[in-house]
Length: 183
Image (cartoon, rainbow, N blue to C red):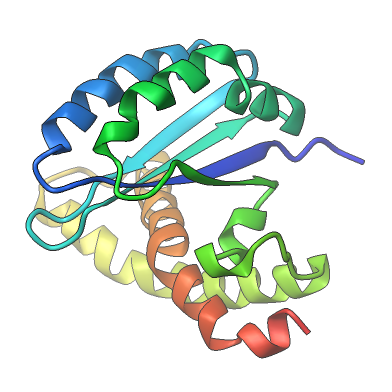
């Protein structure tokens, strides 16, 4: 079986007034994470000021073993202990291989739908986005006076699609079709 990589989705519920300390802590842990064996990339979704308090960190590694090694490492354990006073809840994370993290909300535990359902759901979500996003993104790029260049246009469009899939479409879509998806 081909190596699909692995992702971890970490949620930190940060206490009011502890955001700047948490941000300093991120400045400490992110470089260490980036130098871990098998690290691919990382995204931090920050809360909306005065509205939410949850930070979501998505980290991708080349394989599940390297990801598990990082999550269980002494470096990470020490840094999590250091950050615990900033959290409302304990450090919460879910490890998934491939794109499984798109199909697993905080309340689903370790249940993951069968692959053929993942394929159909992902395809049915990406297809309309791949039709709609260019209708908005390309005129916006031209409005910004960015000349038409196929590779740059594709980069921006795919970035918008992936962002929407991970943070908006899939969490809501999978909640909507939950009964069928996990049957």
